[in-house]
Length: 117
Image 1 (spheres, rainbow, N blue to C red):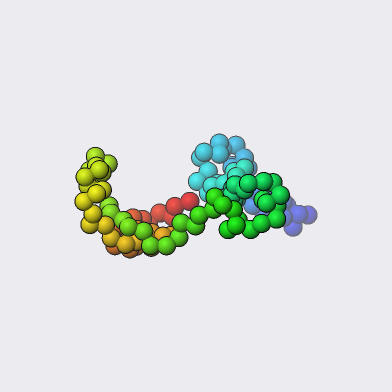
Image 2: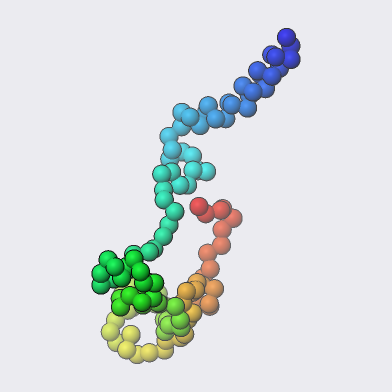
């Protein structure tokens, strides 16, 4: 008899955190980061016809252009500094795309001791 009481008290104690969360609004649950969300994807590639879309790889679409490579890059302090004269003036540096420009020597990296979702 006492073991049953201990078991029921133990299982009840294990459910207390879940019962507490059941009454909380979802915006107050910091561990909840993907409610009703589909996995991210970027697969929309246009084709001339539905048959081409079903049979051909994406690289064969006439409108597919891969953006990977080395790009010219220049960082400006404020949007107002981006003028036609500043763009034409040059002094652009190469940057690898895809890539993080803060890791490639531009701007300041953002460090934090809080894990971002």
